Length: 179
Image 1 (cartoon, one colour):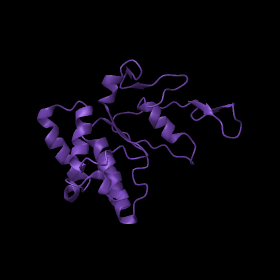
Image 2 (tube, rainbow, N blue to C red; image 1 turned 90 degrees about the vertical axis):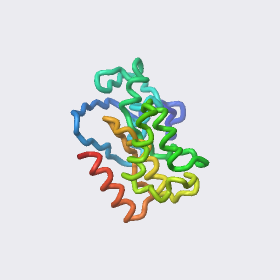
Image 3 (tube, helix red, strand yellow; image 1 turned 90 degrees about the horizontal axis):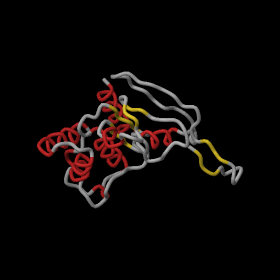
């Protein structure tokens, strides 16, 4: 991925270079690094939000570029910044993303309910997302990522901005997802 470098205007900056990895079913994988290392850019490329300048991405044998519609149904993604609609309720947000993921209508309600329960959002289900605390917005973003139990879940700083108790809860959720 290239963009203009802040230190050398006009010079290309490689946010991600020579990255290659493969995962087996059931593996938990983390991207670690300092700010600016390319972690979020990698997630954006894996979800086709940004296009790599070279190379290819395959997910379960499917080429992301060519088979995006099939690939997107395999992914659950919680970006670094909450992808929520502030005027919709918690439940409406999760339901909306369940539709986008192509989850069949007959099982959406149950899967939305499961996501609400797993993330401890039951008391907030009818609350407009814009009225939630930062920690509950992160919980909602993770609920959106896990709705439908996709085989691949990518979480970009899922506990950012949370208080210590909420952070422990979030990591217990992540541990349950990973097991």
